[in-house]
Structure formats: C-alpha cells, structure tokens
Image (cartoon, rainbow, N blue to C red; front, side):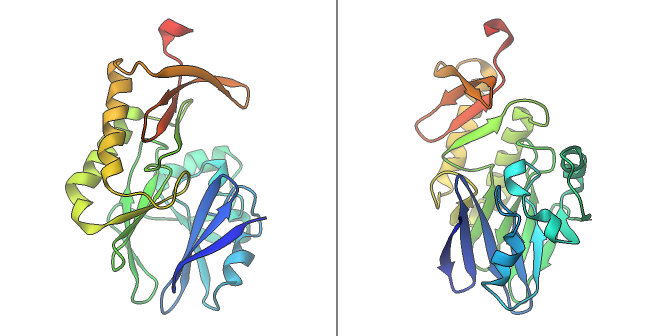
Length: 235
C-alpha cells in the first residue's frame, strides 16, 4: 500500500514504505521518476493521477527503484546503468539519456545530470522551472548504500563536487528517494566531507551491521549514514 502526496499542482511523491518515487506532469506528457520497490502497478498509480501519457525514467537500477518497469515497453535510463539493470533481470527497451540532455514534458524542461558513484549510471533530474533537484539515492539524510560491486566512493565525491560547481545556483530544494523529505543543498557539502573521511580512514564512527545477512560497515554522521564494505584490516 502506497501513500500518494501531492507536492504542487503538477508534482506528486509516491511513498512506497522505505522508498519514494515521483510523478511530474507538463502540458503534453507525464514523467514517472523510478517505479518503486513493491509497486509492479506503478504505471497504474501514475495514470490514476493524470490523463496525460505517462513515460518512465529511472535514476538508477537498484531493486527498490525498478519494481514497476515491466509495465513500460520502453523507459529512459543512463546507458552506463544498463549492464547493472540487465544483471538483475531487468526487461524492456532502454532509451539512453546523457549528461545535460533535456526531456521536455511540455513547458516543463527537465535536465539530466550524470552522477555516477552510487551506481555506474546514477543520474539526478533538474526540474529547471521549479528549481528542484530529484536526486535519487545520491543526496539524502538516510543511509546511503556504498557496499558491494557497482559502488565507487571516489566517483560519488566527484559527482557531488560537479553538482556544486556546475549547478548549485540552479536549485533550491532536493527531492530524495529515501530519508526525510525534502532536503536542502547544504547537505551536499556534508556528504562530501563524510565520504572523504571514510576514504581517508579518519572516520571513527563506524560499526558493523548486517544488511540482508551481509555484514557491512555503517558510518553514521549527524546528517546521514554510509553503508560501506568492511575495511580489510577489520575482517
């Protein structure tokens, strides 16, 4: 059972337990950003909110963002994410999107921002006219998954730095897929600092926890957490 919460006249967030996804409408079409963890009927949910034709874009291919993909014949995704998506049995035709590309819903242009690190092809979506950033898992105050294959903390930091240097003046608010809603741009600097402490070995706030039976290291900061592989010297 999902909770549907209207953000404004043309934007909704769909709360699917621990993850959320979004519906944005323009004058000509609607865009579903991700399709949830337990919502194979994500397309039906979106179509209940608008009479416009609904298309889909995935911020990345983690399992909690793609449960409703099979209802779509095609959908937008970074080509750098396709191998990961297919490795999880993902079906459908991928329409590749690239950094800087614009998807216009009809007087509602959305800019794709490539943000690798959490996964190889993670992206954020800049809702240009509304000065809002839909950030996927990248920017949140929950626990950010950075363990096992497909994760790269160095690229993650690089992506956040690019966001600050190139786009910081273009958005005022961030819609994350997890954690509190919404969050704000000052969180980005904090996430960079925390990630750098982990890489440099100066983070002293780690504890071993289990995620679905897998032991991982949780570094919990006041503003967010990072779930990482356990350092070799602690195994």
